[in-house]
Length: 303
Ligand code: PMP
Image 1 (cartoon, rainbow, N blue to C red):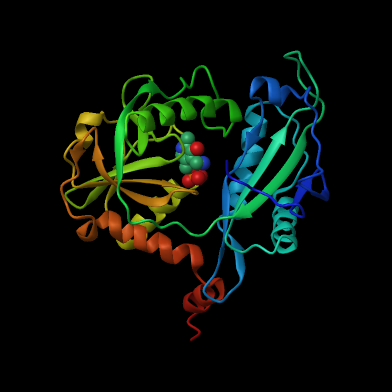
Image 2: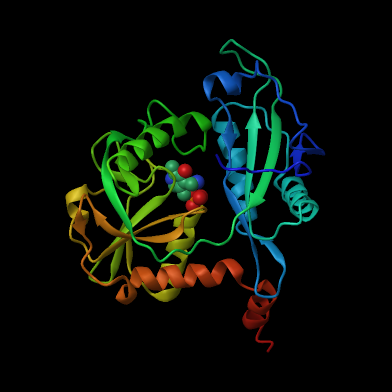
């Protein structure tokens, strides 16, 4: 099993910095029993001028709030205070390239009644930028994503991830690298922990919002397409439309932008290096370590 913390690793727990090895939570928490908590997956990177920067910090902590509200969890934190606490936590743990995992969880409660308070923990651990060039072999899962009429599918809720785990187990059990799940109508939705795009004739296509987690990386890719004049369409489509496309990729905070080799053993036909998907991968690579000040200077015309 992976080790996420050492003897002296600190976590942020309800306003205090405490040792992970000594921190406690209530085993009677409604979150533990019913998967009723919300969380985020965030990354920080060491930028080109050696600063530590949390990538899309506001977007992630705003989504944490939106997820908590979608699940009727009391939420009293501000995005600003949580961003400040996370920078402090990274510094205390001497981390720059890291994965950041805030979780908002419920008090002891075995009933299905509303709670009057929530708790928050933020954990950080080292994670080097991935930016892998290994292409993934992916299979369409027999599991569908949860029906949005049964769940608040736009929320990043812990319980949804039982579905992700089942799909990933199935794919890996059959010798694939990862799964691709459809929605309840059989249209392509997303990977267990990432969004998906495919490329055809220089244009990118991605499932529209509604049955997927609205990924922050997905939104970043859409912005990069606009900047790079790459045409992109959001629409519903079936897996057969992806078969034999020029290229495809998954994108997410942890996965970053990672190319697919094949879907259901049907290869994507262009060499990855010559696709617009690769351009997006490179642009994303640059963005995450970019020096903000240089950007500001560029915009204001200062050299
Ligand atoms: N879909 C699912 C199911 C996910 O778990 C994730 C990872 N948070 C994503 C998409 C990608 O979201 P993001 O780009 O915000 O990390």
